Length: 361
Image (cartoon, rainbow, N blue to C red; front, side, top):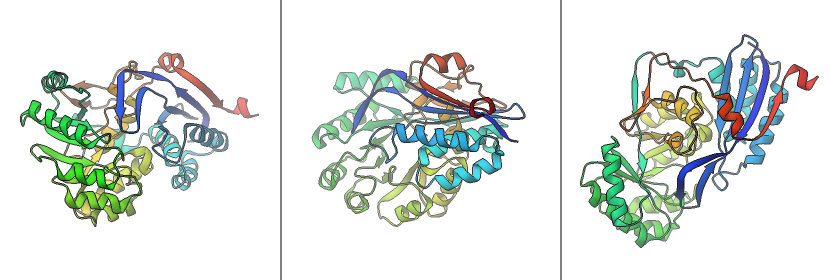
């Protein structure tokens, strides 16, 4: 199969409510969508949102990468295109993954073909700040079927400890709790927070310090009352092997756009199992396109709730038939294959570019 049209779309999708993490507050998502058409009529879509501060890549560098490769890959076979993109993952994983995922969908990658219904439980962030807000929110989330609650931390140690304690008291053992600092602490803050936690109902503490701050994260893991999970630190199988050697690190968090697509994610999850690490997968700032791909990819590996909940945050969904969701879980239905709502895509476009035989002649 040859690639006979490649289209790029960058969208702006307002969120239902602000999404606050340690390094910013999101009010919209601005993903890059890659649309690839084969000469057999097949269409594949891929996605990457590149939040400022989360990687060396930027939205503009990702767009430029997709522009350059959109023009260069036109007319090549899917196999030839995949070789080119695989070689680019090391220096542009987010943008390369968007194009690799579109190729995977174009070729109907086996991971995306669901033969039997599968339910992928999701974790859910608790956004309330005051005790009454937290109590009401936790009761609502439990009633909706969620059984893993995520508390964002990384601002101030005392404030963060108080919020975690309030969520624990509100949940009363009815849900597992995770915490994510999104690299917001330095070593001293991370150690004070992690060593002060009451471990009751807490499953893990995610990424206290910087992505490359291995010594600081190891110091936090050493004193933590709960297991640590590394997220932004994990970009390759070598990083998984390194994490397995850190006492107190029991989990790794993977994102397709950071690890480099479906095949690398599967290899990474297999390796994590081999070295005794448990796995979380998913992107909290993604549309249902990437969340569907991640749910399909992780469904046979995950033993805990996934983090592919980004599709629930924007006001607008992008699938004509929305991704099924019930009682806190993505429901992967047999034979489901998404079709993008092109009117919704167009309505939220910031920019687009098209590469086709006519466009480049």
